[in-house]
Amino acid sequence: MILGYVLSPPDNEEYMFYDLEISQCTKYSNIYDINLVNPEFKISKKKLKLNITETYDGYKIVSERFKLFCETEGYKNLEFVNLPISGFYWFKVYNVVNYDCVERGTRFINYNPDCNGYEEIIGATPAYLKRKDVLADGFFRTDICFGSFHRKSPLYLVGVLTKQKLIEAGFTEIYFEKILDKHQSR
Image (cartoon, rainbow, N blue to C red):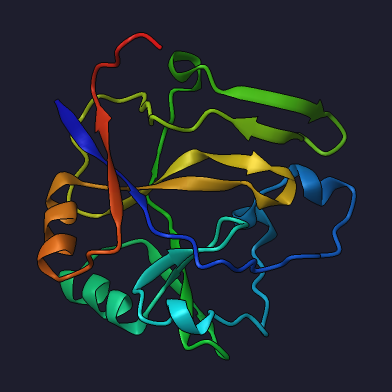
């Protein structure tokens, strides 16, 4: 049974922060905990037509059209952080679902007890969720952020109905990876 989908937009060939000066503990954090945007961030001209993209450092960036779609559908617990120079938004999701790291075999690398975090968390896809319920109509994110150093970010998930609405609204640039209730052995 399909529980929902991982939302995977194309990359926009940009970093929110290529050379962010970080503290020692920040490298054990993630983009949600750091909670910063680069006020000078711009989207490359060839990517301006996309309604949702992702930076190399894990920020989901959306257009005004995408924001209006979410507002019209009445989706809750979303935030659109204005990126003034680009005219786009950092799309943040606060509906959290628990990821099944044990079943998936997710690896947590180099724990730092002083910073209470890992340098890297790898093994995100295919997505394994703890609850085997079908996701409701809306946007969700995993409780675990994946990646390396301060560039760790959650997986963004959508319900089956949400995927259909996005396609019908013409958001064709998004790739959707199925989240299944049962997984074949790896």
